Length: 128
Image (cartoon, rainbow, N blue to C red; front, side, top):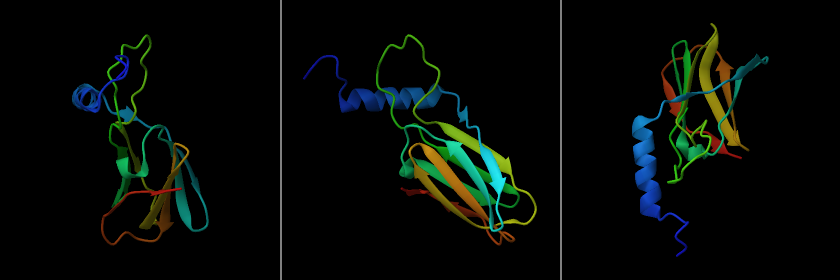
């Protein structure tokens, strides 16, 4: 094995250490309204749909993604992690009857359907 390549165990250990000490990255969003839903779009690079959780509860939408991987390396400039993303937004009145979500090309799309929320819902997006 090439000494420049980290083993799975080294990557797992570095990822665990990074997850313990990193600050959660607040994700920017774009939000718009359609006749049927409120649509939230957010960039989530370097994570998979299985890493992402989308939750809706009265008046709130929250999504977050776990840290995907943090290989042992010495950065010259290190401004973001591969995950550790989180965002919560207030929902306007009249939205929340259900949610749908997909993740493709590093972009999370969440549709919050019109209507009243009857119970909190947690989903993972579908991978497109």
